[in-house]
Length: 356
View 1 (cartoon, one colour):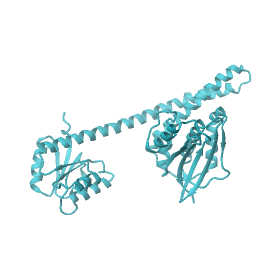
View 2 (cartoon, rainbow, N blue to C red):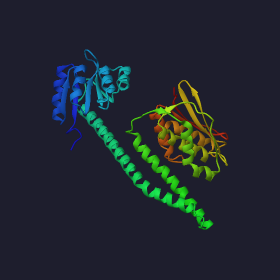
View 3 (cartoon, rainbow, N blue to C red):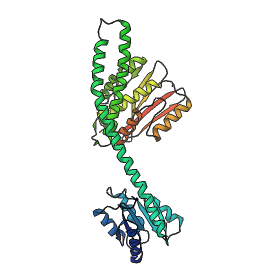
View 4 (tube, helix red, strand yellow):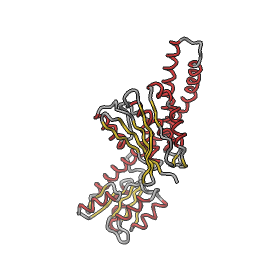
C-alpha cells in the first residue's frame, strides 16, 4: 500500500486552472483532494475536515499564503498539519519566510506534477513516522507507569521487613551490615520508581500552584535522603527563613531530593551542602551548593551544558533524576541550571514564581 492511498490533501490556490489540473492529477495519484480558492476558505475548511497535508499558494487575494499558514499554526487543532508552499517567487527571502511561518517545504511554479507527488509522499511518510513515534512514547510511558506501580508494593514490603530486622537487637553485627546494604539498595530503587511514576504523570497533569511551605518541604526531602546523608556523613545546612514562592509541594520536594542527592555525591568528602534562595523580579532562585568538587573541569562544563540543553543524563551518575527536575520546573514556569567551577563545587539551582 502506498503512502498516499488514504491521505487527504487540501490544495489552496486562487487560480481555477491550477486547481483543476492539480485536482485531476492528485486524484489519479490516489489522494483524496480538497480545494479552496483563498486562505480564509481554507482555514474554514480545516475546522470541519482536517487534511493530512496542505499545498498552499503564496500569492492570493485577501490573506496571502504566509498569513494563512501562520493562522493555521496558531490553532491548536491545525498546527500539526504539514504545509508545502507553491510559489512563483524566486527571492530567497520569500523562501526563508515560508519556513519561518511554519512551512515544511516549497515547490516553485511552474512545477512538475511528479515532483509535487514525490514531495507530498515524502512529507506524509515523515509525518506518519512522527505519529508512530509519539504513540510508541505514550505506550512506553504507560508501561513504565504500570511497572513502577507494580514494583512499589513488593519493594515497600522489603523495606519494612529490612527496617524491622535492622532495629532488632538479637541479630549478629555482621548481619546488620548486610541489612544496611539491602536497605540502601531498596531506598534507591524506591526513589527510581517514584521518579518513573512522576515522569509519566507529568505529561497529563494539570498544574495547580499554591503557596509553598519550603521549610517543611526541605525537611521532608532530607528525611527521604537520610540513608544518603548518613552514608556519606554529609552536613546539610538550611536557612532560618525561606522567601515565599508558589508551586506544587510534591513536585518541588522531588526537585530538592534530586538536588541534595546530586550535590552530596559530587562534593568533596565529607560533603557540606548549603541550601538557600534569593528573590529578584518576581522570581525566587533556589539552590543547593556543594563544597569542592569530585568532577573534573571537563565534567563540570559538560554537566552545566547538558543540564541546560539536554533532556537525558545517561552517564556519570546524573541519572533519571535531573530529567524529572527539568520537566517539573519547566511545567511550573521556572528554569533549571547548574554552575560549576573547578575546585569550588557545583551549585544546582531552579526558579519558581514568587509568592505574594
